[in-house]
Length: 377
Length: 73
Image (cartoon, rainbow over all chains, first blue to last red; front, side):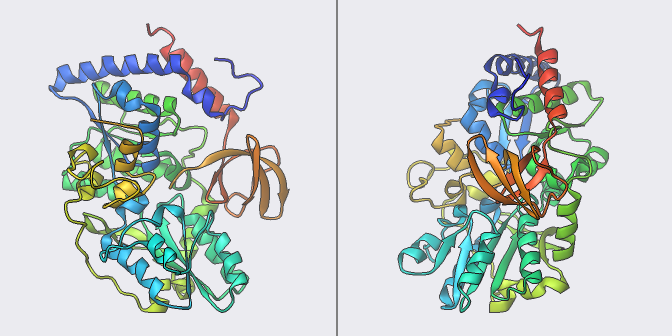
């Protein structure tokens, strides 16, 4: 592998087939050793939806799936948004002075009444897809008589970008921009999975880009309290395979339990500027997770100083618990208890063009990943 | 949704930068990464540069792959 004079971040360098095969062989050897020791296949959860997609796209599941159980976790932000919160978002369309702004992933998640933001737009509602939360400020300037409500869905990677847009709006005195705060935090979700013992996980492939923001030290509790093998991984095929191999080493040798594979991007302290801006604009609060319910201190709401940006408060939209779509296994899939292929609706009544549950809607949902890349088991 | 893409900073002006994603270019906010300089590689997420990418660390990891798995058959 020649690396001189090359862009060292080019995906081709991180997808080298020969090395991928070599790492896979090592994974197979170690997984067999683990099997001899414990009588079971090692199970690893990829917590992040972007990893779920990368694993399906690159064929890693076909490469090592016979030796290692790869389980998708609650790491697709659209998927973990509770049905009650989806309904709250849709409720904004009932106000004539609102323009709903959202990332594209949210457009086709159905509310309890059977329609989504895309349906609302088709019927003439004002729903805009934005690339960046910053685009909302432009929308706000261009539409003075309207209020822009941005759907604030995302983990720690996305939350600082929204916090930055809110801070900018505050400084520029833009008073027609609001955010529906539905942020989720990864470490409390990991704690929930481990404490509840509902999913059988031997190791975590930890989310690379969440970790860019929160830093590797945010997982010290995994090392110190739970002693569960965990590796922060990048998103290219070699990154994911290497992380899986590192986890297996930890399982077999039992010396270390924590590592950072994604060293080129993840620092121990994370992104200090992003963390500071989130601390200023948000405060940690309880959040509703699909299929789980409330996890304490697992989300963000606005700090007192920025409370006027809260779209739910502005429009008096409160939370009500709603039932999951009938027959949908999304909740169990998010907890690693079921695989997409276990769901009787998967690929039949539930397809990306006409999805029943959010795991098939979001481009990072486990069902969407399996469907798109033809994963069978 | 946590998809972030490496890009190279071509121009910098106040808290905005023009970055190149291996051919296509766009403007991104530098509010979350004020220390970055022209020529740096950064990760871009939702229109924001969120982290500097370290070439030395990338090389270290790529070399490690080669070294660790060299003797695999």
